[in-house]
Image (cartoon, rainbow, N blue to C red; front, side, top):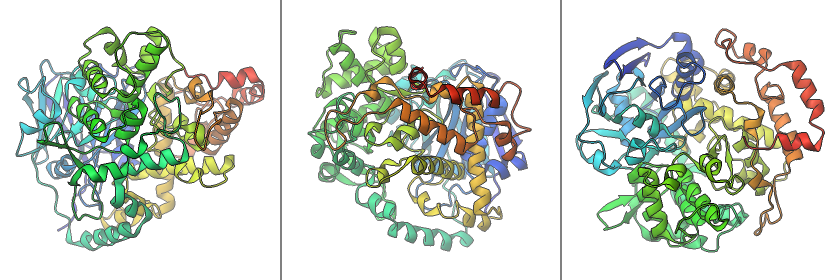
Amino acid sequence: MTTPTRDAVLRVDLSAGSVERTRVPEEWRRDYLGGKGVGARYLYADLAPGVDPLGPDNLLSFMLGPLSGYLPGETRYAAVTKSPLTGGFLDSYGGGSFPERLAGSLDDCLGVLVSGRAESPVALVVEDGTVTIEPADDLWGRDTVETDAAFPDAAVACIGPAGESEVAYATIASDAGDHHAGRGGAGAVMGSKRLKAVIARGDAPEVPSELRDLREQYERRYADHDTGRWQAAGETLESVDFANEVGVLATEGWQRGRFAGAENIGIEAAREAAVGREREGDAAPGGFRIRTGDGEHESVPRGATPMTLGAGLGVEEFDAVAALGETCDRLGIDVISAGNAIAWAIRAADAGLVETDVRFGDEEAARRLLTAIAMRDVELADALADGVDAAARRYGGDDLVPTVKSMELPTYDPRGAVGMALAYATSDRGACHRRARPVEREVFEAWDDADVVEAVAGAQTVRSVLWSLVADDFVGETMWGDLGAEWLAAVGLPHDADELSRTGERIWTLVRLFNVREGFDRADDALPEALRRPLADGPAAGSAVDPEAFGRLLDAYYAARGWGSNGRPTRATVERFGLGSVVDDATPLADEATSAERTNRRTTAADADHHTDDR
């Protein structure tokens, strides 16, 4: 048995009701691999600047990688689109059975690209390398669990009520809400297209005999890897205890760095409540299964659930936190943005800006507001459905809960780890801890600016490669040495590690060019006012982000990336990564003369303030 070459995509135009099979240009597969990279290349090629993320001209891609279904760990897919939350590039990833069966359903195709808008709700059915468009009026209004249950013989990626209401941080859910392409609002894009679900009817691909030994080798390597041992012991729920211990667990709307009730919502509480793991006996066993509500349904809360819906909202009972997480899962709404939105509402009410009955520690009231947000039921909920920045523009309170590029921060507080400040600021999709997470080392080591830049830029580059292969987030760490070169060689796609590192930089630069074309620049890499206030407690008490020091750090990062001080790639950088023929006239590049002037100006305190204001 040999592995098929994934060299085509299926283009679906919902306005026209048509499906077209097209070849992926060979140089795209070579230079961008798949997943994030090829998805970004299509997005840059297809979208004109300023396209409405919720309009029919936006593109939503469900992308695999050249090794999908064969790599060790959990098979994943990339949802690539223009974000309704940030207005910039978005790639979001989901796991579970859906991408596994999608890989089997697509045969030699790398993905499904969806444009247009259906007149009434539809579902896409993927099978035998084809896509059919089927009516789904009867599914509209159902939550993610109910929608999944309607297809017992298939795997489903769907939206819930939040996606239907075009909530700016709605998710695409699979496995009855156990897995989500979570951040940035890909679910809202589905809702705007009247696309309720994508149904994968094929079986998971069989691992070819020539790859079985390699897969087993990497599974053993992962079991002995630090990340493998950590993931097997506690999955991401251990992050609660770690963040609390080092004092970077954002608590009660970013007012403190430690949560007194952390031990009640952390890993030990999860183990006590768990009825099992997602994949018992696997080298990557996945999350803890928790019975919620009436006990008939099991949810799988990840680390972000107790961090954002627990510590972030002052809820200190694990069952209550799990119930809030299940509510988000069923509604199809991102737990990080939703938790921050509710925290903002509570703090805004305390400041007299809005009226709400929700208070820190009140799980039931928080759940009611979550549901109202998903339905856009009342004025406050409607504002919160567009994100914290949108609510602050309407009511005031832009200094209460931090955002970057209008995306709410995960609850690793960067005031206790400046590397996380740089990681959030320069993340291509808005505040994200997955692109780079230097906090795990930084809090234990003495780093200078060069160390911080190297850690952040290095991780962003590596993950750009691995997310183009669409590797398991955790098991993929065993591939950091050669960036997957051994795997690519095994399927006849030779790349060496240096070439793959350049590929990662090329992809990161292309995405930056997309965002620059949408109007993003240095001002969008700023950190908000809320992070200038010192932490009140814990090991990092008194720490805050110093605007002038952060400005110098950003300069060093831009220099390492080959960007001008305005945050735009230089012409030399574009040419170095083979993007000279890709970049269009609508994409401004760095003006070196202007960059020099801005570098000289930045020594003043007033200008340092300018560069750290969130737009």
